[in-house]
Image (cartoon, one colour):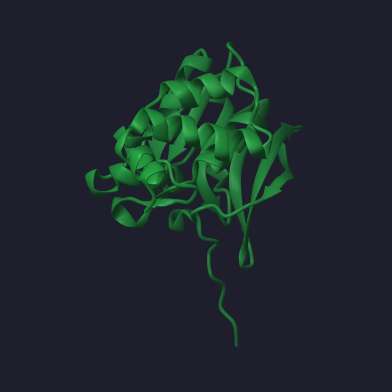
Length: 201
C-alpha cells in the first residue's frame, strides 16, 4: 500500500472525500444535495467493526445475516433516481445496515424502515408510501410490498435478471408498477425476494 493509500485508509474524512471525488463525481453524481449527504454521513459507522478501515471501497461490504452493503455508487444512483421530495412519505427496505435510510431521512417528510425479511413476508398494512427504496437486488416484488406504493409513487430497487443485476425505477400508474432500467450495475442480492420456484418434469 502506498503512503497516500495508507493515509486515506487511516482517516475516514479523507476516505469519504476520496470516495466522493473518485467514485461518485466521475460517474455523474454531481447534484449538490447528493454530494452533501454523502459528505455528511460517516459510512464507517454502518459497517461491521472489522470493515471500518475499508468502508469507502467501491464494492459491496459483507454484513451479518448473509447480506451486504451496496457500493457507494449504487446507493448514490438509487437516490438520484428516486429524486426525493420534501413531501414524500418514504419507506426503505433494509439490507442489514441503516446507511441508506440515514442518507435519505433529512430529504423526506417521513421515513419508515423495514427489514428485507419483514418486507418479503408481510401483507399490506404499513400504510401507503410515495417512495420506496429497496437496498439490494430482488427477483420478485411481493404483492404486499407493491401495495404499499401509493398511486403515482416511485420505487427504486435492484432487479435480478439471470446473472445480471440492474438498477430500476418504477412508477405506479392505474394500480400497476412499470419498471425502467437506470443502469446495469452490480448490486447485492436480497435472498428474501427470490422468485418462487416452480415444479418442472
